[in-house]
Amino acid sequence: MRDENCIFCKIANGDIPTYQLYENEDFRVIFDAAPATRGHALILPKNHYADIFEADEVTVAKAFALAKQMAEVMRNVLGCDGINIIQNNGREAGQTVFHLHVHLIPRYEGQEKIL
Ligand code: 5GP
Ligand code: ZN
Image 1 (tube, protein in one colour):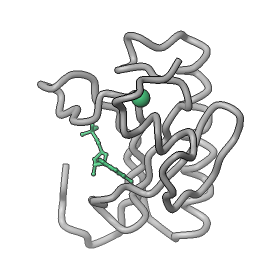
Image 2 (cartoon, rainbow, N blue to C red):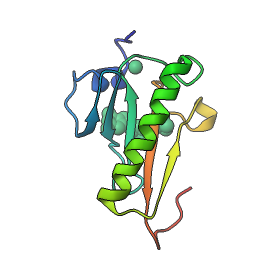
Image 3 (cartoon, rainbow, N blue to C red):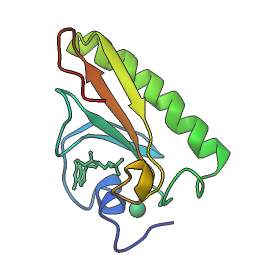
């Protein structure tokens, strides 16, 4: 369930070292290389799915359950005032890495709008 040419497969499975917040059997949670805000993180499944349409329902449910848990941790640790949970599918929707991922973007009071 891996794509040898996919950078997120390598990161999710530990072949490329990265700053990570969390890991379990199915997912790795990492910091975005070009953060939109302080603490911007990505949830990566260890298996390769190009987008939400390729993923099974259980994986999607687990990804969003984990997104909620990570958002709660971020709220407590970062003291952010809000969090965007975003998931892009397809080039036209802004997807640039074609391995399913969920963005966690902490937002802070007084911060310029980015979305
Ligand atoms: P997308 O636009 O596909 O939803 O989001 C891809 C995200 O992955 C972007 O926010 C980009 O900054 C991030 N990204 C791309 N390559 C890497 C990488 O090699 N490492 C990390 N940590 N983030 C990456
Ligand atoms: Zn992949």
